[in-house]
Image (cartoon, rainbow, N blue to C red):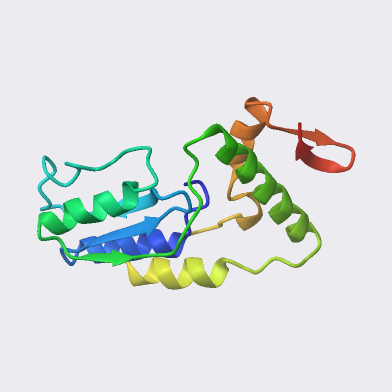
Length: 155
């Protein structure tokens, strides 16, 4: 999930350190993030999960519950596990980029600073405008998007 919010990653790490799992469900029935406690029985927590199915998240929750692991649910997100998901990701990134150029973007600095200090690390010189550089490169390399005189657009 290339758009996984930093606050969800931090919350997942904090939750798993308290012997609890944290899942961010995806809009297609799967999930974009799962954080489990380090003492979770790795041979059992994925048993019975219906992969690539609209019940993947539900079956994962059941498997965790069967292992007596408490679970918190995070934000709904978009994952990228099907070809059409890549096109939708590209559209969202293009819209986000256009919004940033119009000056309508919200600063992520407050989220980065508050969560980095809460888990004991420092984020230095984060370029939020370029935060998705590897995702952008992959979309260009896959010929999903192209750069024109008008900006970035779908091919």
